[in-house]
Amino acid sequence: MTLDDAESPDGSDKGDQPSTDERARERFDRIYNTLRIRICLLDYPPGQRLREEDLAEEFGVSRTPIRRVLVKLEAESLLRSVHGVGTIVTDIEVEELEQVYQLRLELAQLIGKLSPVAPDAAKIAAFRSLLARCEALLGKPDAREFARINMDFFHLLNSLTANEPLREISERLYYQTTRIWLKTASRLSQYTELLLNEIRIFHREVADIVDAVEVGDLQVVGYIRRAHISMSYLRLRNESRRSS
Amino acid sequence: MTLDDAESPDGSDKGDQPSTDERARERFDRIYNTLRIRICLLDYPPGQRLREEDLAEEFGVSRTPIRRVLVKLEAESLLRSVHGVGTIVTDIEVEELEQVYQLRLELAQLIGKLSPVAPDAAKIAAFRSLLARCEALLGKPDAREFARINMDFFHLLNSLTANEPLREISERLYYQTTRIWLKTASRLSQYTELLLNEIRIFHREVADIVDAVEVGDLQVVGYIRRAHISMSYLRLRNESRRSS
DNA sequence: CAGCGTGATGTTGTGCACAACACAAGAAAA
DNA sequence: TTTTCTTGTGTTGTGCACAACATCACGCTG
Image (cartoon, rainbow over all chains, first blue to last red; front, side, top):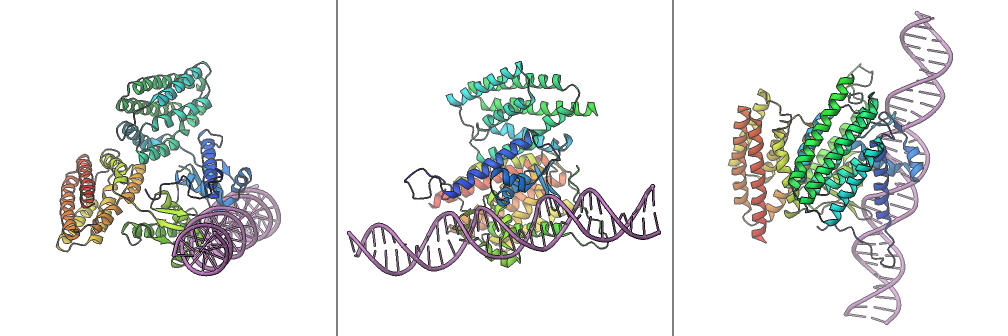
């Protein structure tokens, strides 16, 4: 409690000018989120080599703060820094992620169980808005937009629990696995049909969950979510095996 | 798969001389574990200020690798670096850890559920050995030794699952909460009796779990563990409230 | 022609100096 | 005497230069 106050530690209340320390924090988050999005949307495909100096130049800072971001991304196994070689976007395979998915199943269920927060009108509106985006996607399938909606949907679901450690861990595991669909699907021959099918299923999931959210039964949200994550992984693994 | 091989990337098979990169990794782990132990055993009590330069001198390195360790410890909320002030050991309160404990309960159960590994003879022997240490502790109660045994016990239990993400997360949450007993209990008046009582209960837990491990029922191990973590937290919270 | 050794090149890791910042003590003014 | 401003001291954050390392190309040798 004594250390959690991060509102205005400085006394300069003349203007709302943020302290340098806070600006550095925001800068860190900005770079971190940008790079994470790029990795998870395959703008940086697996195996891509990132040069610290290029990133430093792009974001207008020195190598040092860039390295802080890279270290964090490496701790989440999205990157891998090898001395003398470079910083490389990690490659992932469907089979390797089985344990992560098994854990994600359980955590998805826990979101409705540990410290659930009753969704207010604004949150329900957000869910409805996302459902609308989903329906729009049905008419114009796009893998990238699908991935983005999926991401927003995750964050919305994650906000249904007040258990901070659970949210943090769920987020980390989500970003650890979300690339695999784009990567695997893009290699398959029936890419377009696969995408449309996946969007249809996802749309049903969102519709089901929005119903449960409106009723206020977060336990059921957990069940639905768990089932869909599980089936999504199995579909992906089967498709991957069938093609090889 | 392509990046996971960390055995011997270098071709120098003359001797088993580790590469500089590996030595740096070991050094990092060594410093990291040392500091983590010191924090969790209250050698560095909450509020303690750590000077990067002192640590750099103690471990014979520059400030830079020290900072890497401190950043990781800060990410696990054991430390807090404040610009211009210092690196401070975080303070914790029983109430704040309730969410973490709730999550730990569930994860403890998952250890027996996700990818359980059948304990071999060596592992069972390790459990028996720990039980013996526990019994020895009954004759000569010591808070610090109690904390150490508790730590070893946790690692032993954690090795019962092959789910790597689960192990990592459980470990992190364990080290996030384990200080609270030493900190809270040392403030109470009936410290000695409290300690002895806690050791007795812990001894029973270990005995129960060793039985379950010998039978090979890891699901039951999870149940017992969950129950004991829960009760341990409630005891601590009640004692804390009663004294205030 | 194949294989190996050696140097050139580019990358990340490390050490160091300085900037930014917080805090406390002391002096000066009300 | 109290309050406020200033300055000194100590800390972490940042930028930069160099060391350690891996890779590749080229030439040499068998």
